[in-house]
Image 1 (cartoon, rainbow, N blue to C red):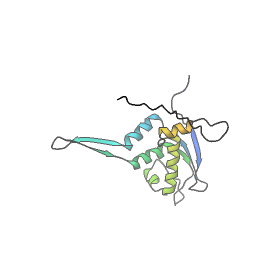
Image 2 (tube, one colour):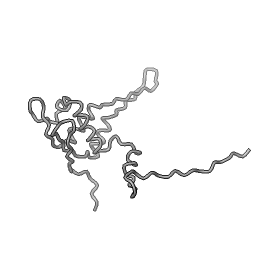
Image 3 (cartoon, rainbow, N blue to C red):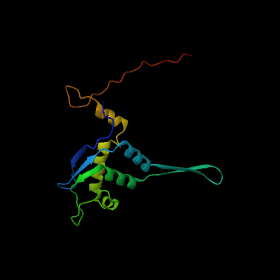
Image 4 (cartoon, rainbow, N blue to C red):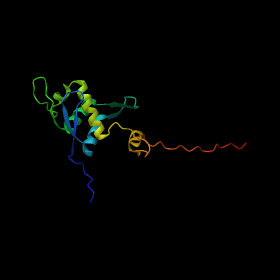
Amino acid sequence: MPKAVATQETYRRELKSVPDGFVSLRKLNYGEVLARREMAQQFDVSETEGGKPQGSIKVSQKGVAILEFSKSIVDHNLDDADDRRLNFNDPQDILKLAPEVAQEIERLINELNEFDLTEQDKAKRDLPLSSTSEKPFEPTVATLPSVQKQP
């Protein structure tokens, strides 16, 4: 029977922002994806004194990053300024990363889990390659005949 559960398979990625640096990542399971979504956007709807509905949206990018780093990074060789191995289960270690390093790791996690790909991006990625070129196949657009209105 086909397995439908998340695996613990890891993917090693060399870092461009840290010479000789690497991270080994795993995909998030569905429960972690749901937790990420809840954390990413929190809606609050209430009533004003006049009885009118009032709402707000809170976006927690910091919380999402901490969740993603702590759940996705299973191995690495990254140290802090004191030659201490960084602990990605400790939010303070995540938050003190150099921005270029954190953004590269964030991008790798997003690519692995496809968080930021739109449906159009996914469709482009999944298009078969033509046998005569390395470019993705371009679908043909049909032209419909024009319809004239009757007076």
